[in-house]
Image (cartoon, rainbow, N blue to C red; front, side, top):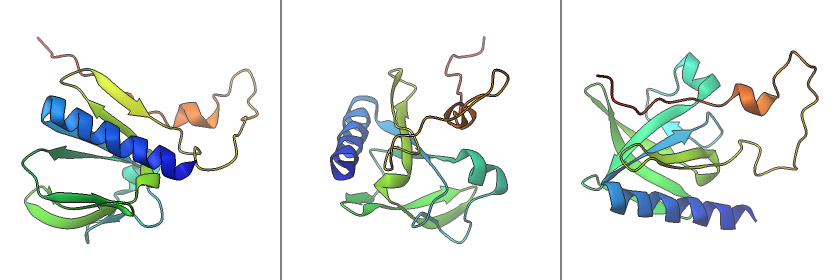
Length: 134
């Protein structure tokens, strides 16, 4: 089932890229993810990192993952993102998003939460406001 989900991620990625010209990918901190020598910052280890791809970039998505040279500030970094580490693929231009639970590859989990406590899945949601400020 995981390989089918990864194929769906790839298809959504390329469809959004074709429609909008760029696509945003939320990647969780996980084994196999390489963000050059930069790595993940402390906050990114908790919340993930958003990477931007556009149709003019040179990258490859193979079965094992996406290989790309991405620029952080002014420094290019060789990156590798396994599809299992991709939590969300979205495009603010067309208001479209595809998301999976970080636990999607494992057994379904039902978090035990008290009345004042949010489930673990809710604490990991990154909310982004795409509306233009006037």
